[in-house]
Image 1 (tube, rainbow, N blue to C red):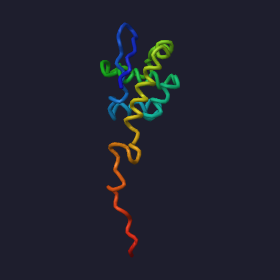
Image 2 (tube, rainbow, N blue to C red; image 1 turned 45 degrees about the vertical axis):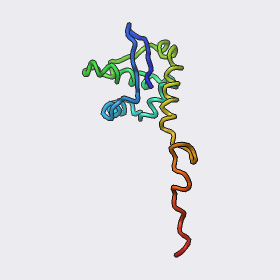
Image 3 (cartoon, rainbow, N blue to C red; image 1 turned 30 degrees about the vertical axis):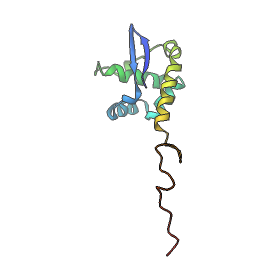
Image 4 (cartoon, rainbow, N blue to C red; image 1 turned 180 degrees about the vertical axis):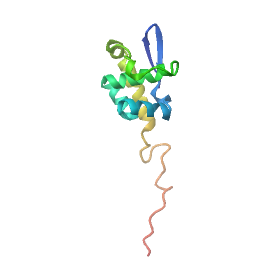
Length: 119
């Protein structure tokens, strides 16, 4: 579910599914965005969401990087690679969707006991 974005002479490997709980807490403290709001925000070109996504990745190499000082990539860079982000997030969505009844991996009706009708 990786999103590769060429920026600043480097191919950025951005994978929001690898964000830790601590990183997500840092994003929420600074932007008020939950994980799903962050993902939706990037897909909808929200500036804070884009900054938070790239700040989180860049901060792994520069722990002192302040969000308030961080611009993030230019919008044209994000737009040029947005389709790949949306594809990666669609893949993530499929992984999060519970199996429908009767599909492989879901419990069959024979696995579920019938409710008792006797008192």
